Image 1: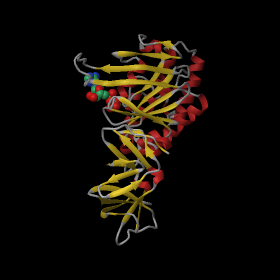
Image 2 (image 1 turned 30 degrees about the vertical axis):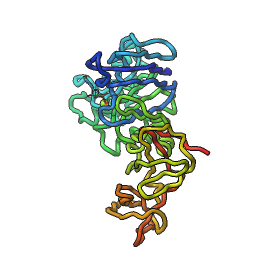
Image 3 (image 1 turned 135 degrees about the horizontal axis):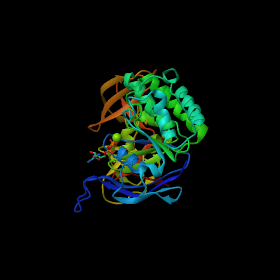
Image 4 (image 1 turned 90 degrees about the vertical axis):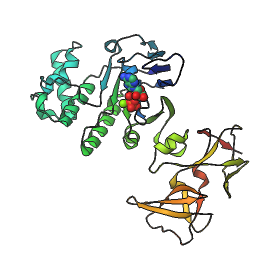
Length: 356
Ligand code: ADP
Ligand code: MG
């Protein structure tokens, strides 16, 4: 497996020399460490597939360079890059048997037939298709075909990295969970470099050690699930991760005080914010305490989400979400307090440190 360096990668499908607007990837400068399990998370259209295809060589970036273990592979073909890639929809040979579909990438590389048999059976066992080895792929369900695709991606252990592009979209929810935990086990056992693309935060947070969040053609934050949750670097990360996402509201900063309409919120420290631009306060619903002290709010909606309730309230004319625990109730004259531990300050959408 290899370490993958993306150096100042930019990509435009239809380049317009006069404008930056049509860059599907604006500037990606990032290292996937050898043996790391990464999730690439972001909304539809943010550039995830473009980035994977640039790593595998299906696409050549308009600018920038790509290194595997320090070696420049920018101009190498897909074959030469030696990457396994699993796509969102099945890519298999319908007329071949399940066994031959998995054997194909190995035979293609001249692996001896005895080793092919061992690897294919091992992989079929793992994806739950051991009994289907002799069946032709044609008659199988979409779900089973996608498992074959997954198997084809996992059957070779000599690749530089394995890339997964929303591979479990067509798989049923229970099997999704099973396959995902198998991928994690595989990672632990063999130390593969894995990049797993998804737009589903639960999938990303459960699969990866490091989550790479993309937004509008750029990487906005790389972190552990806890870091993304507690300290979103960009307001987008705050909205996108968590359910409901982070509350974000414009404030005026004066030292350690943040002014929101007629209310003053005391911050954990004065923000080291740049002057000018908009300043916002972000706080997750988990850190908004609803009780009989603090800033007055009016409650507009209560949603039951199982063990907790999401309360939507209006604070100084803006909607704010709070989480109410199982045994808590809404007081007659509701007020809220922001737990300082959960307060983040943003200048022009980017988080600024607070101190002193
Ligand atoms: P994601 O995988 O995150 O959904 P993509 O990488 O597929 O995003 O797409 C990123 C952007 O590039 C989108 O705006 C998309 O419309 C555009 N795009 C993707 N593929 C092509 C293509 N073949 N030609 C032109 N534009 C494309
Ligand atoms: Mg995609």
